[in-house]
Structure formats: structure tokens, C-alpha cells
Image 1 (cartoon, rainbow, N blue to C red):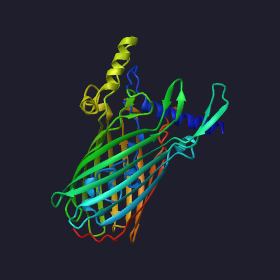
Image 2: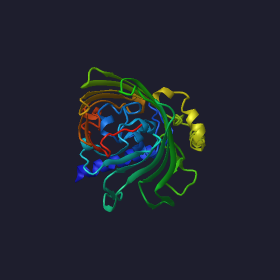
Image 3: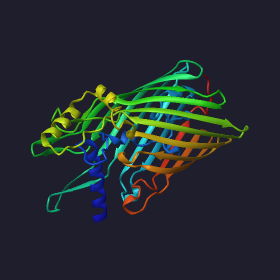
Image 4: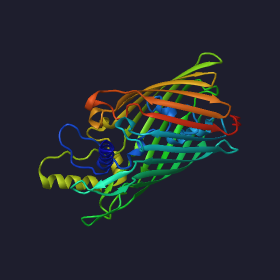
Length: 381
């Protein structure tokens, strides 16, 4: 029980750090945001390729990466669900991310979609300063999306998504501060250029995601935090070797559109003014400020590959890179997929890395995804 309590406390601290930007010291200046669960891959297929998903071939989970892909899917209707136990390597058993997504292609080849992400942080035991138990709480977050994809040409489409975000991390009043669930509204705009009709050749995508309001967890209207707005660029190339074998290589580059917090000077008045200016920046201006000093520190890279046999069996590998100043997430991943009739089953695994205090807390992360092509892949457009 003591081990679990320590683990739960660690998770809460991670989340609280993500919603309380402070003046940073030293050479590490981590850019933090609220609702970081929106940056966790909710898709087992992409998870097997180092979180590669912006320009891969479309499927039921395309809305999480690039909604503009859906008009080029093989099935006219599809639905998918993914379950990811989170931080299992730390001994946590009730922290998880679950997602549900689906789309329907209309008669003119466009598509409508909906999806939901739910992140549970498990059951947290709160204590007083003496360590006596007070009460328990279940922090949780979710987002709900509605989207529309417009086919602009035989190979190009535009996607637009609206998103509602709810983050319920704590409640109650402490020292005159009332804590409440945070709410935000955001949207995505994306483009996708598909490969040839047989899936061979180059494909590319651009996705602007989580462009929306700030979020607040208290009754202080000024105490608001940024959500993880992001610019993503992706490219893939598929080689069809014969009627049964093909292989795809791809690269995603993602840039967080959130400015770095001010670096502490040690002068209280200066640091307070800098932090107030940081918090008071408008959302739109913050996107541009994210390209200031240290802009490339918040760029991540996903490199992945997918081998396909007879459109029924899939093997995937990938690599994810993040700068040391932003958390130093660097890992290898692998995955497999199976397709039988209308069902698609995908697994992914994050390969352990590091030792002791340097061990990646996401090591051994597993994802399970199941999707269904409801019309047996009968593409009409």
C-alpha cells in the first residue's frame, strides 16, 4: 500500500507541475501545459511506430492525428477503440487512457467523425501533514470531438474539428482558493495529400491541433494555463513490392505552440512581473511567441515503419525523440496488427530504456486497439 501511495502521489505531482508554470532555473526550462493527456498517443497502430500518424494511411483512429485522412479510407464507415494502461512500470494499476473514434463517409465522398478520449489518474488518497488519511479522489480528464472532412480533389482533403475538454483534477477550498474542474474549447485544422489509388508513393499531412482557450482550475479568473496547441508535419512513402507485400516509412515532426516560461533571475519583483506577463499573453500571441528563443527545444520527432502482408498482417517499429530540456523522452516501440474480415486488432509495446533513476517511466507500455470496418471495406469514392 505504501508503494502504491507513493506512486499515486508521483502522478499527482506530475499533473500539478503541468498546470502550474513557474519561473525556471538552470539550463532546463521545460515548457508545460495543462491537459497533457491530449499529447498521449491514443492509437495502438501509431504507438507501434513511435507515435507516427499524421500522414499514414487512414483508419478509424485518423481523427486523433489528421482528420483530413478519412475521405481516403477504404471503408465508408468505421469505429475503433483503444485501451492503454499508463505508467505500469511504476507499479500503478488504475491509471489508464481509453479512446473511442469513428467516422461515416457521405455520398459525395466527404466524411463526418466523432471521438472521445478519457484519462483516469486512479484513486488518490489524500492525507494531512501528519500522514493521517483524509479522503480519496479520482482525478480524470476527457475530450470530445466532432469533425468534418472535405475532399478537395482526388488526392487532397481538408479536415476541421471542434473539441470540448474537461479536466477534473481536484475540488474544494484550501486557504481561500476554490478548486474546480477546468473546461476549454479547442479546434483542429488539417490537410492530407494521399498517395496513389493503390496506396503507393508519397503522402503528406499538416495538422494544427488544440487551438483553443486557456484553462483554469481555480476561482481566480487570471490564473489560467495554456493547453497543448501543436503544429504537426508528416510525410510517408509506401513501396508496393508485389500483390502481397508492401512497406511504408514515415516521419512526423511536431512543434508545441506554447511559449517557454520565463527563466528565474532570483529577483522577486522581476520574476513576478515576468510570470504575470507570461500568463497574461493572449492565446494567439502565445502561438507566435513559441517560435522565440529555444523554439526548437519543443520539437519532437517520430520515425516509423510498417510492413504489410496481404493487407492482413502488419509489423511495425518506431523511434520517438524529445529534447533533453523538455523531458528527454527517447524510446523505441514495436507493434503488430491483424485483420480478419471486418475486424482489425493492433498491439504496440514501448521498449524499456534506461536504468535506475534514468529508467523511462513509460517502459513496457502496452496498447490494445480494436476497430471495425462496418461495410467490409467497400469504398465507393
